[in-house]
Length: 160
Image (cartoon, rainbow, N blue to C red; front, side, top):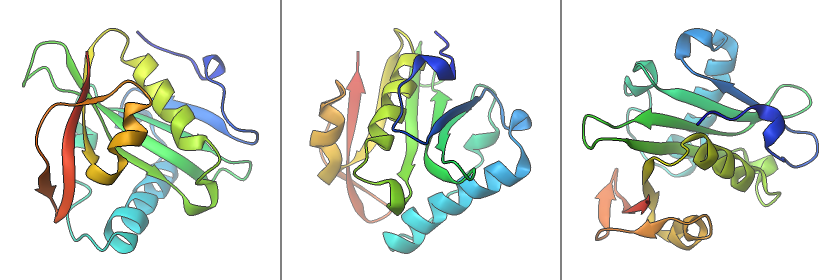
């Protein structure tokens, strides 16, 4: 299933953007998304890891983000085709929100858009364990034990 930006209700001032491939994504926009991911995951969470892991380049990788009035990235996710692991499986990851947009519903709206985009496919996420209840509000359920990913406790969660 594919959604269009006008099908998703976002907080005032935000616009949904979707690209089906990294080739469609303007370099400056991808730079801003990658910068936000590094600011939050690497610097704020003090987690040294390679965010640009090559998966953004994979066929079927979709970038979805909401941008503010000045074009700033408010929140972003990437959706990956995981059919190599399991038929029909998708994953949603790199869920990140700029500090200025936290607590305003931006990440929740974007996650709903990502879930809608996946249609009836099974969806897997590796959620930071302290956010499991937040993801559960969107229909995800814990499907495994807590594990460390880059020294942060995570749980696998799924829909369908």
